[in-house]
Image (tube, rainbow, N blue to C red):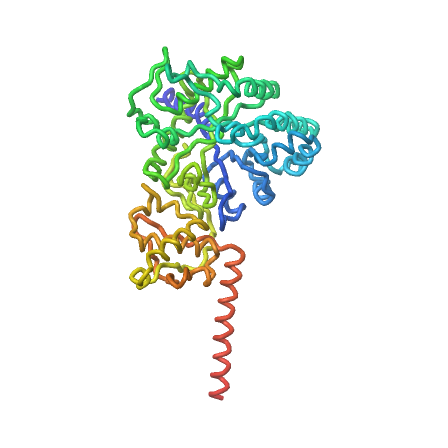
Length: 486
């Protein structure tokens, strides 16, 4: 009995640290009415996240992360790559302002600087090809000169579209980097390897399903329901492992068989497509976490998987050019409430929400009951919906989405409300040529939520002014009453 207990304790000691360290999360900020950074950092700590990946160097976020003990991957956005590639001084200034300034004992634990984000993506049509490697060199050299090069490594997060396998034999072992970018990718890999920096790749099994109606659904997940793919002695039961190992083979063919790999983004959205829902997101993310927790790796690369979940919180102003799902990758809602239970391998499936969130007043902008029946209302209504959606977030109304079941009138109310909320509930933003009205009755149903957004500084000021005005009016009434009775 004692021997069994010792064995269990020894096994837990081997697996627990790797498990805790392997899961990070992406924190994007492309949203209106965002959460306070210090509140998000507290939530990260409460839920046991040890690593976070950012898409920029936001001062308020870095200040909030100071002293948290959370490992950080900062980012130089794509729009700065040209400047960083042409001007070593600009790279040094960026490092001084965003890395050195926080790299002190008890400061921010910065481990990586991501130079760009998916700069070789096919849809960019080569825009960043000539700037990525020079920018990477300049940032790493600036880190070295600042005395931080041993602790902070510059890298480049690539999209998985930089490598593929031929259609004639689509298995991982036939994979290689795309011919038109192979030489440049190998040069970058050589630079990363020489600096002991990792190769970072973003892998999205959801997109395999989204882009191909014939893709086997179960192969996108980790619970073994799919027909396996065989590649020599390797057997693949999910597309994540197959994709990852295609990179492993691509790196090996380039001369880097042992290159460290970090999965910079991987996740599943909860809205905006027929396959994007809470059930599938939980199924995928929980399966991924359990897979990483085994520390068994993939068929071609054994060992711990280091991954950053995408993403932490929904972002309601992200571009939806790739699809409406882009605004719904969050494990947490826009207000920091968890969408579903998720065991981060700490034995607790109940995620902790962000605390102390202040919302705007509980009121909504909806279509007037008589508006739709008015003569010539249909044309005005359609134009008003289009305008409201173009200025807000109506992705939940799309095909297969959570609010797709609404009527035309329901669509109008949803669109009007999203515009009204994102404009901070100004009364003049709930008019739409006289078609709309403000109500304090929640129009949500069991599937479709009409949100009230987080209060920003403007809406908080208006709310406080209104409260003060009411208190003054009450006080004045009391004084008049007292004067009359005296």
